[in-house]
Image (cartoon, rainbow, N blue to C red):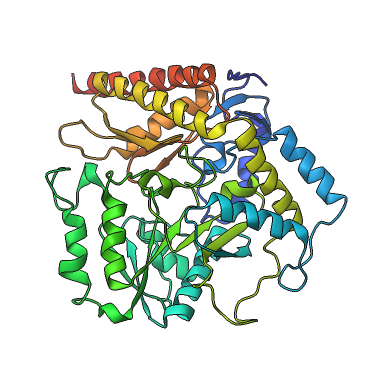
Length: 450
């Protein structure tokens, strides 16, 4: 497959339609299906469906396949490790791979202090472990989180999450005592102000209305956050936000828990998204891209913080040897192919081109992101900023039928997260398809009005 879409059967094709009927019968309806795409194979930045259609992938499996699909070094790592040892619970018996990977991750993650690692199999699980560790270490029952956040689907992770009511509907409240704070969503400021004239009022809100008011400071253990809110709409905080936040929380002894599920392993042009703000969290949780989609998650913290006793927290699936072997290879591929630099440079180019389109099509309200994690917010018009989910879906659908795949997040934000291996010609190809769909939706809207 080359970096050029090839649609041979109008999607969904005959095979895809047949599989779609089975999908409705077999798979849980809780799983969303943004497009009727049934993938047969994939390579680098291209995916092929069961009807032979080839698509340019601007989603990379929800920002998971950072080194592209089926990279040969990753395939080799899976093959070689599967011949030696597939799995043995790391909580009972150790192996050299988990130590080797741990050393790499300690070196790559923010902070020069001593660190310790706990392996699990999903980011929701990594978040659960972080919450459990917070309570163990601090003995404080209250945690802070952000409005519009997404931290996972397990009960504690869902209690922290607040991007959509449906994620918590009919669920019993967990034992987690959570207070949600306004996130610095500057395009839609919750205080109806503009940056930088706002002077970070969202931070003042914490001291004026939460600490010592809603919650006694001596009972707050930590704050869970995403350096860039992913499912919430690719929301990027202003330049000094996290530095100011850390100074504020350090003053009260409140720990910072960084959820890097979507922003880690090079996605933003840095190993971890929070590095763009040059602060060091107390705990970091990440997974997804670490092992190219194989089930592997990590909770990493200051060694002094991870002070729980033997058997207080164990895991029988995390630290899988094949996943660890792949993770080590992912790190080497990113270094060898200079993918951090490519993420930064190609992302900068993408944002520039999309902002040029924004000047022409006023249905683009905002373009934002870091590296190859970019959001395009679709609105009624740039003056009133009213979200337009229908037109966002229409643009996505038209792109899909022309061979370009991406998803929607937030209220009406198109989420652009291609593999970090993507080259300029593939970006230009994708942008050409995107602008064609954008133009068609734009013209259809104004044709209706005339």
